[in-house]
Length: 316
Image (tube, rainbow, N blue to C red; front, side):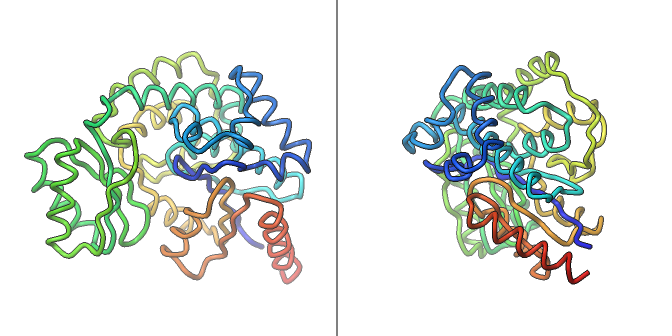
């Protein structure tokens, strides 16, 4: 019997037209878009289905739109009889995982992530912070190089995505210096990312403080489904841990590789990426190529995933 984890993407996965096909074919998916529109006072269908790329790139639009698409897709998966035994999400995707686990309602989550996006954007003035993807060098070497560049400003590990890929964040000058050192030390690539803020660095602590105040007004329950947290790659199972992790997550490293390995240790052999894009699927395959990995973002990928999982169930 497959043990299934649903994993949910974060910012950067968005694209115009995402979720449109599923919503037009499944009323359960369309209902999620309607709920988001009603709660936020914006036309979420127009933003996701017809919005231009620049509008979708605005952090306070990106975050609720990806969450909405992910949960709409999850509703269709559940309709087809596929239910996860565990969940996790990359950065913003952790909110989708918590909705899936019934720790937080979808409407509360979509309102919260819109504010989260706004607070993250406001935390550092435009141009003062940035991020870079580092490839082809070990985690320990990255950390050594970050120490060497720290005299130029804050520069920290933001995401440990998979073997050989770490994202760094901080003050622009310090990130640029770190990239230079990393290339000298043998990194295959050091690519500056087109982002508007140094997400998941200590520079985002003011955003975490504002988010903490918002969380006081949100009803969070103990989750029904285990969720592996970005902050520590541990299972979180009660509302107090959830609040703490969501506050810390804004300015802490995302331990994605560690989170996937935690789920593998718990017996997960099947990962379904639920949401726009296939980035997380690629990360999982790099972590362990023997796993069953699927992504669901449209009707074709939905049907392929259902057929594959049902075939395995019949074999068992």
